[in-house]
Length: 94
Picture 1 (cartoon, rainbow, N blue to C red):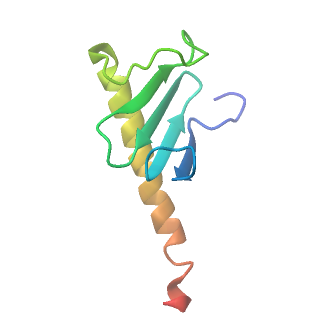
Picture 2: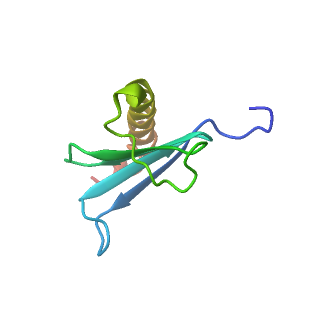
């Protein structure tokens, strides 16, 4: 964008005393946020423009299926790129 910001921001979080799943990943754009829970059939999808408080989960909304797929693909690509970049870090210790 014109301000030089990123298109997406990503996060990952392992299970802790609060998180009810083994592993969570998240991708966020300026307008949307998707949260994926490892091994679960459900997730979270929020329209941040019309729902900045993240009150309405659009994960199962058929009208948002394309956005869900777009963000899931961005998340998958980020995880693959991340694994490729960090895969060699421990090569000397194996």
